[in-house]
Image (tube, rainbow, N blue to C red; front, side, top):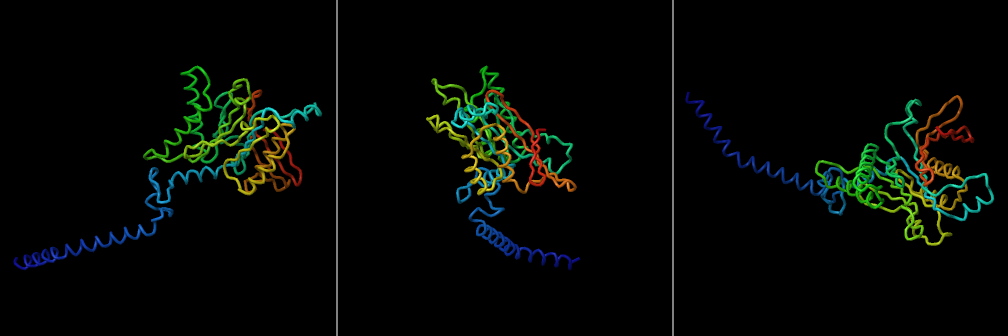
Length: 340
């Protein structure tokens, strides 16, 4: 009975002597680990840094990592090209006088988006359940690119804002009110705990509110971009031209575009004269095809042809928002477009 007591006392004495040494060793390991972590990720740019998972903490370079990643996600979406045509131009007048059979394009905004989901799934699918272009009022519509679910959620928010405004004030929501409310909703998600920013970008197209002081300033078609940070950017500047002869079409690009191709397409489409709406449609679809060379297409080996589906929308005062699917078939050098 005495020998176990001796061993027990001896082990407890050793444990009391080793406790300070053990704590010192553990503290040394912790200090070394923290110092190593600080040396590697001091710039805040590496994945896994202490700034990566906080929406409201700026890294040492002054950036918000999660917001920057959301902006990059919005730039990986389907390429969107929009063309704003002013109310008057010399090309339209000349064409109307010389070619009475052709209809010149109306004042408004024309949008083209490739529908990639139809290239890899069954041809029986006509829609994936996510509307790309949503009407908000008689003079405002919204298009989104990036994460489709986030874009659908923001479109629902925009529709709800327009309905609430009409219910309270008895009139359609103005462009300024919609932009301010949407930007506020998007910016909230960059500071809300337990949430992430929206990974999509919005294209807000407006035909104008009508004459202002007897002029055409309020009737100009304008396009705005809202990014995941909540900032609003004007994409066209037709309202800056005071002379009728200086008014020209303006372009807007959203989504995944090759920078060099976007620059070339902008200069090409800016200098092009559009005499009919069919020319506008062909120009926008061709621009998306040139940029989207790697997009999936349905091909038939026996016939040697490939097809791709595009979403084309015209937003004008006379016709409102008209959306159609264009199936573009290519067989050798022959290109055929059919409306679905």
